[in-house]
Image 1 (cartoon, rainbow, N blue to C red):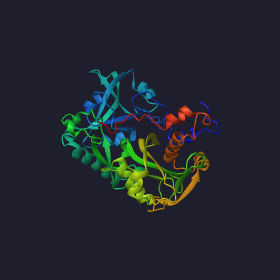
Image 2 (tube, one colour):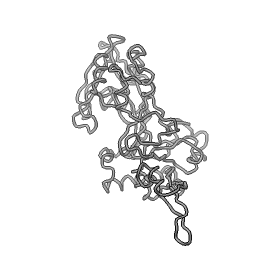
Image 3 (cartoon, one colour):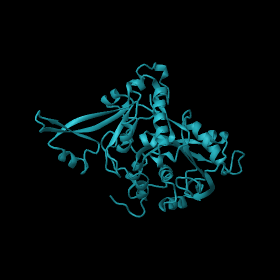
Image 4 (spheres, helix red, strand yellow):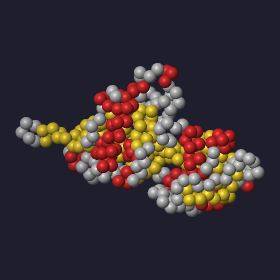
Length: 384
């Protein structure tokens, strides 16, 4: 595949380097080359091939195996010897399971088995307590890991903010729900501290808005520069407004909240002019996690400057350093130069595609660039 210097594909591969997969969900971590284990609500959900709620690395599985309220399902496969199992495990002794030997009465080895962890799920006792029980279970686990100094990079992002975790609408936990209960965003299985979402590999949802003035060649985009004190991508360019979607917020509610907090744009302006533009999906890959991200995207064509509705964006919290009004060529140049936060680069490329600035005529890897903005994540999200 060509990666000509003019192509935006290298930028998208930097933001999301997970190779294309054909299985229902990713099964191998691209950096560590270790297995990824699906995380389910119930064992029946796993048995019936439903989408998992999360994707867990082997390091996290190892920690979960010690926790109450969580069960691991393993299957045994006969191998000729433990050395064979070692070879199949990239030279390490059963990296995702254990070898077990059956012996004759005289003590000689008869057979060797490799135990492979196939799924992780909540115990029946936890599920019997419903959404509250599952939330309490993961909260206890994450608080314990934080107190013990486990996964320090993830815990640096602790925000005391709960995120919704969605199960497949076909999950067995919803069997008793009445049809009237099946409303949009009603398939929340439990809630989780934001810092824990990447560790459990659950889908994280957010909103990204791109604000602009003018049309066509005269279009200019409002681009904020992130504050120097941001843990992630300090002083990088960002989407005009962006933020996560905590519990209790629909996308439009989250959008209104973030626009006021980050740019000083009032509710009236956003509800009148902002337009839903779809969703961008991608994976965030770190050694200790694989995080499926989904960003609801919005466009904000600002009214003319002489309109009484026009509001100039200004930093309204400590997350934004300043706003700049950039031409589309300058935005494209900044993306190519790595001046954008990686996730916002993906969203902005999608914006440029939708508005015709990136096309098959000027992007040699157009098909793959479009696909990379809309990855198949393989985990459950909102649905009925």
